Length: 337
View (spheres, rainbow, N blue to C red):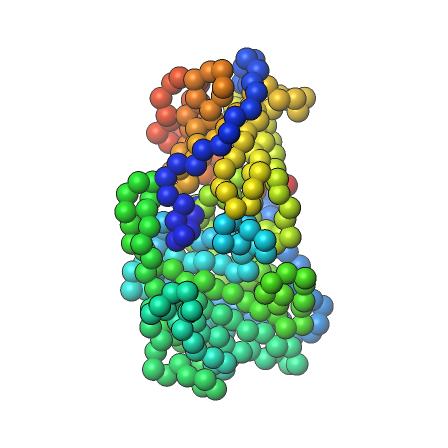
């Protein structure tokens, strides 16, 4: 998973110590993935807005990152956490209103000449919301302040971004989608921004699920959820525990700095003790599978491929010095809380 802000290429980290014991353990059977509970609505005030995805299925794309979630921390959101979703569109894809409402404002993006932001107001009872759509290449002529819009109405075209996937140049389209709840305040920038996840309508959920399983962004080893805490402190670590397969009993990834997508790793025994540690070389933008190299100071790297969807990591690691796996057919399954 990644960003237009594209995280191109390889991300390397400084090293740590190592043990020589084998991290392999007996095969266990992975049961069904435990469902990740949807976060509760941020406020008990009556009047809940139901939102659709601001994209049609025909406009989906996952050539660069698919979807970047709420709350992750990166160079552009190191202090406050990402206040919405970045959604990848096919080039020429149409951005649509996620709910019926009134156009509050249309204005150019100051740091992106030729791009626009549309803001819609939504009133449910006495409860005020706003949806925000940023990085539009153009805005439809009927989208003007005070105009009423219907759910699904086209707002404009998603703006294109040039970046890289690995080392290959790529052009893709994306928009930043944000939901503001004006009954909800926090001590961070964009204090009204909330995760759109708990507001998704039942009809919107299947399309969201289809998009989310394609997501691939550099921060997901530590911040893997569609709704991550915006007030995360760093260094930040996340432990993944084996639920099936022959890999290490656990893997812990640590990011030292919110502004740098660099990781350290530790392979864990059943007891939780570290049996190997080192640095990570990550190519999160590669398709069809992102690649990961675990680099120990005292042994040949372990080459691997992986996939993460929320609380489940599938990881296929070769033995030190062996070639990279080509798929996840022999992957171990890891889960996190």
